[in-house]
Length: 172
Image (tube, helix red, strand yellow):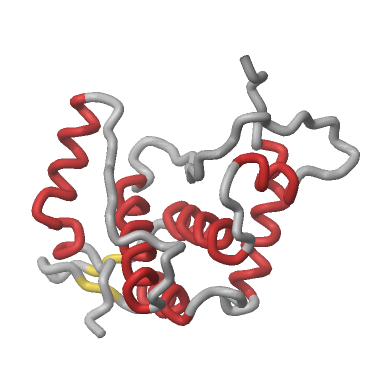
C-alpha cells in the first residue's frame, strides 16, 4: 500500500500565492470566473427576506483556492500539487497511483461547506457554458458520506433551492 502523503506542507505557499493572485485581480482566470468572484464577494446582496447577506471569509478563501489551483495552476491531482508547492529540499515521496482529479477544502463545522459546494458547481457550470471549455463540467454528482449529511444536502440542493435563495447566480 502507498504511504499516506500529507499535503499540509503545501498550505503556506498556496495561501501566499492565492493572496497574490487575488491582489492582482485574479490574473490568469477566465472572464466568467472574474465576473462570478466579483458578484459573490464585491457586490451587496439581499436575501428574499430582505436581510443583508455576505459570504464568510472562509468560504471566499476556499473557493478562491480551489479556482486558483484548478484554473490558474492547472493542478489535476495530488502529485501535481506536491510537485508545485513542496520545497525542493523537503524529502517527499510522490504518489505512484494518482490518476483521479480531486479537490477538497478543510473547513470547520458550520463554516459553510455546502455554500462553497454550490459556488464550485456554479463556477464549473458557467465556465463550461460561457467559456465553452471542456475542462469544466456541466454535470455533477454529489455523494454524501451518511444519511445525516445526505438530508442536509437534500434540503439545500433539492430542486436547486440553494441557487434560488442564495446569491450564487448573477442576474446577467
